[in-house]
Image (cartoon, one colour):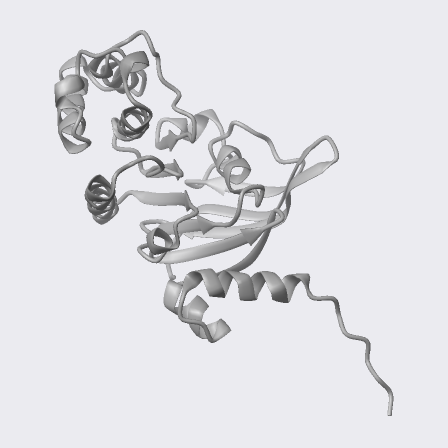
Length: 250
């Protein structure tokens, strides 16, 4: 895409015992793009994001994140929304947001202002003083997302960010992702929802810890002669799984 890579991963292998969660995965995410990471459960999406965030170390391969090895040097420039909310359940929504803002270096006034902005965005302003433990599952998900965005990270890692979110709010969130991206944030997002993947500038399809295909939604469909991304994924999966046919001598 003619841009410096925000994430450059080559031959990434990560094992858990005998399980190869990542099996030589290659992926380049350009600075300033929204890339959707698509694949079924067990494909390696969450493991890859955790490697990017510096929470897991690969056993093989090479990766740079914002020009540095994954880890503490770039942690302050990354926002990571986990699948399971990583929040302080005894603290109210507001205090969680302010805490994470302060953790990432925001002044107290800036953290409170940013918290107010995000609570309005995710429709949690009326719940600002409610402890997280008393929120519904969907509201916890929204609080988790807001905490990941509180410090305006250069790289935003979103692991299934709209699970449990109603369609109206999902549309609002995607509009905000677009605004963040337009302001310079790079976004790597995992999703099972193909109409969400179609909103991404590029899509990386992975399976069994390997990269199957990368391209714009239109390119992937064109390459497989399909109309829907679901069908394109199935076509790429089948092509990888198909055994090599032996040559027949005449």
